[in-house]
Length: 288
Image (cartoon, rainbow, N blue to C red; front, side, top):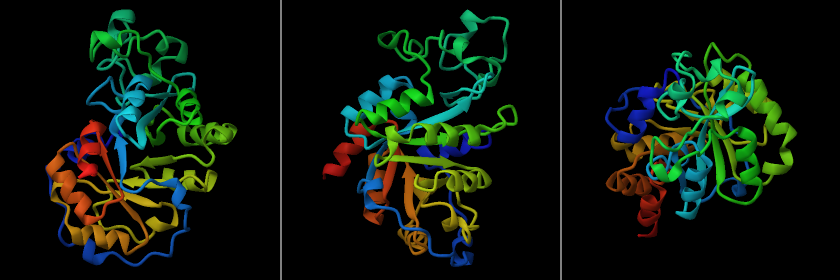
């Protein structure tokens, strides 16, 4: 999320306030298509960046730990390589979470879109977090789908958009369609800040639930035409009324926070899922 890095931080920290007048001006949308309840767990525990608080983010190791800690889904960020392959990494560049500067010192600024999949597969994506995760690799979308097919935690895939990666939505849709046997009937969902992209993805894979990120501007009149849920920003500032307002339009409600006090309040509002970097902590909150 190139325009969304700051919003993502706000999602987890809950530091800003929703506009007070936006919600009153929302027009009633058309009734959205109903999806089977099996697509969702009740009050989903979603591992943000696959469980970034306890393992190197966006890795298979993180998702495995999150699943063992009670996560219903692992949220991964999807980006495109130079040779148009799909990999799971959050940042636009490889520098923060891999040893790319060591292996490719002359390739600054080390953008994901400037490296081939073969080059990215050489990188260590775990040691920056802890020596215990040395040689953990940047996974591909295919690997995540194979993991889903083995019956572990579900997947929530955030599509990252950049002018340097044209056509990523088409390639995500094509990969999902060619691997339908790995995810059909399992918990798979897509999310993005880009409404046009989500409309396209809904048309391409209409049986995959769609989440719209960061919709705090009141422009919700057509969201239910292509999306099943909103991920509302600024979790610490949300009110029960705002949650009811979204639900009254037939949309599910998700939020993101690592703070147990805020998690408990969100649960009292009836949110359908919470994203957190520490799913074991949320598991404990959900128990009581």
